[in-house]
View 1 (cartoon, rainbow, N blue to C red):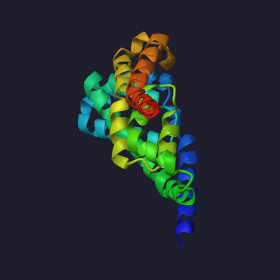
View 2: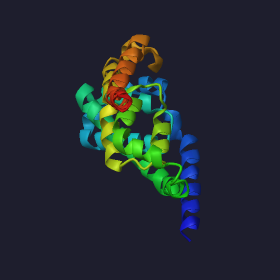
View 3: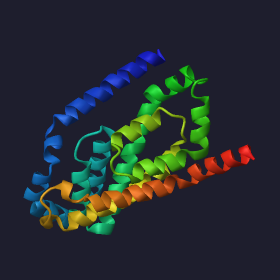
Length: 229
């Protein structure tokens, strides 16, 4: 009975993704549309800031939950519509909440079953995640080359704690959110989202990500050296 229920939820979830990806909402989340409707969107925010900010967060949440393209565009829009620091706050709420929802769905539908079926094989892997999982997740979040939706899904298949996933996501996406919202505040000076992440910016984020993973690497090296003495 429970399996049938999960199958129904999987079908509904996939159907929702297909519908949303082919809806006007997906078509609207483009760089060109944001530029085209800039003045109208700014007017909406000025007329009703509270409703606009809540709507923005909910749209961002939906985009991340259902893995829709356009998260980068929404981050730009956050800076354009709400300024840098309120924009970062709204982007982080929407992105983190959406990632958490995707994580929970993946864990409920598939993660529990995988952990149960391959408990023996995953024992060492799970022990490593319990000790150093927060370093690994933080590294993946800080380096912008890893697909956001894929991290949400794969993390849901592990036994990593929800709280660990939550805080590493919220903290790890903060630098990228700052870059995008700042660029969004100066939207007229860029021609495409690809201009935001230059080679230097990507290298800086990569350095941050590698810095985050240094503690477990050093710990393993020291443990190995101690064992050899």
